[in-house]
Length: 469
Image (cartoon, rainbow, N blue to C red):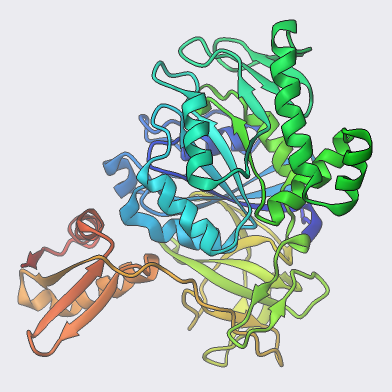
């Protein structure tokens, strides 16, 4: 795997309500970047993101998934989040490690409950947000209503970069107001052509472009001064203004897609590369002591474990972000919580269950490792003499509770072990032993969340349990 410098990395979290098309769009990103040779589908249970048995069973994401693609000299780390409300923990951990949130909205349904919940999480974490209006090729889509709802819910910063020409079952064309071009796809979405904007769309395009130009100018004093003088900006100036507005949380640019037809992917990848912040200009991380740590490759070496996954034939996989410095394979770091030494014997980059070796990673990048002795989720590893401990991920409080017991009393010890293992993978499960009731109480995000845990106990760990009301 090629080594990417901090300025050539983009970390994006795909968020949005279940069914908004995140995992399908991730397939398109991987295909365009040459990471896969054909797109998987949800129905065929073949997407890179949803590779676990429980996700095949439920037909949707249960865990966040770490992927990456390469696009014109830039590495894009993709953190695909589950959309179901009960699995919001995956969205929170993904957002915590990303520099940009990409909010997918189902243009058939507008702003859904999950959309609002994920938006609030992104806002809490002060993350820049771009919006993808997806499913524009379906007969119930209503782009204008979707955008009106988004502006009503999320404010005037919601601003068009693109709009569809012919939304609905015949959808195959988008107008890009920055490029002043129309992109038209063939019926299968495999090929597209770039043309000038049709005469009948010029007035609408220029009106939208004028609003975008003014919004971009408002993000920077120098650009605003030039805009007052000339009432226009160059494409590069617009890009700089949009980037500043996105970083400041003042602009939420809207782009268009039909993910299941792979329409709109290339231009969104271009936009991520050109207008989304790299880690070196993103907001710094904060230690528990309140110290700001910039993503600097020349800084002290440190990584933060943000996700743990138990993988068949591999065991515990620990996903990390390089918070500062540059780390390499066979390097010794200190767990700053336990003060124990850990050898980073291997570094991987992941695409779902597929892993590729990486020898070195710079600050801001995302990778994975295995076979650590005493390191768990939300632990910090750093070079000797460095006392960084990064803030824990702030998960939402549990909303549902039930007592759980093994049907066979001889399995009680195993049950406790497996529950702690499942909690390592999903920290939104909270375990509590009630001395008063003499019961093991399991707190979760909802009944579906609870039943998903029981599915793992039944099908993966082969231990029969029951919930006690």
